[in-house]
Image 1 (cartoon, rainbow, N blue to C red):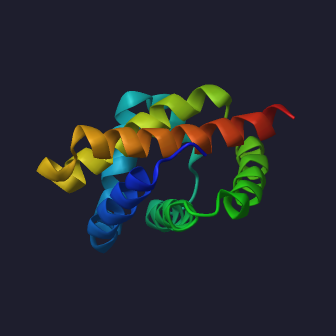
Image 2 (image 1 turned 135 degrees about the horizontal axis):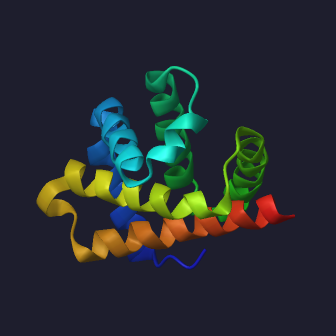
Length: 137
């Protein structure tokens, strides 16, 4: 992962501000995602609050692994395999990443600076690229 130490700090500090509102953040995320691509709603068959908890747990795991991406890659590969069975396609990562960035913008307000956005975008690209590569394997 090509994050600078400053980007790791920006992601970690900003996520600490989002964590207390994680359920609301998940709600914002899914509302945004489904507004970007309504066809994705069919992929979610369970309780959306539970799904939101899973989403935030995965984001937390990614944030907490920024200093050791070697521990994150196997988790992402396993996640990718499960997502294939749910019907997720590589093209779905763009609206997902954009919805996550929008959620952070809403959750952080003025603290969602261009530097914070770039740091998160770099991390999300790593996550998406790792998962897409596993999906193609």
